[in-house]
Length: 268
Image 1 (cartoon, one colour):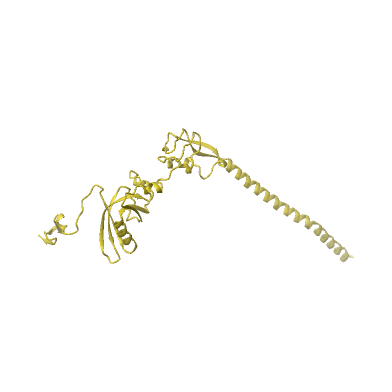
Image 2: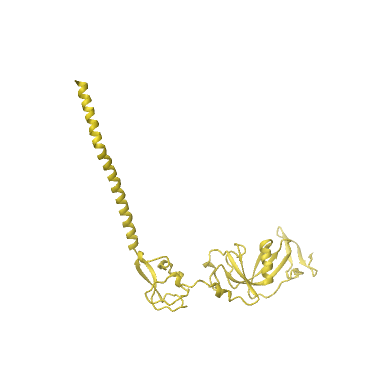
């Protein structure tokens, strides 16, 4: 009798588990669905809040004609929802980048300033028209040494010592620097640029050929010169231009060397 009673109870529990199993699975699936729905709703709320958050953009405070410069007097800020802005809008955080730039087209008061409304630092077609007849603009990739630690600016003059593959040397003097990277403004402060990667020079066709040959198979040595210095220094017999040199050892003058007229040194 006891075995029959226990068997009956065990069978009853099995039947109950079978009945409750679909219900439990349904509860779990419903909980997962509710959690996913809540997560989706939260994501949508966050996206809506981001779109409705105010963003300050730059607008025209007065009528701006085509070709006019942007400055603090004709620019203002305006706050609009983020959903009404795009990548072309100029944010107030980038306000200083507009100062000194020019407008491509006319802009009415209150209209947003777009990056497409701003002229590039220079236009390729216009820049090419600045090259005189018989001259060429040559751009070279430079490093810290060639750019004089980034201090080379448009308007500077340099001398180049070009050495070809056979180590033959050729001086190219008085070359004008017309651009560093995309900067053609001679009055720009050197601190405005982080690091110069390209320098554009104004050369003749022959000078450009020699520089190109030295750049590919030889070496180029850069020398910065004063733009007002028009003196060409000869490498021959130029020792006489230097004063005598005193040689000291342990605080006692040993001898004094000077340069004779033939370029050799004589001890005094």
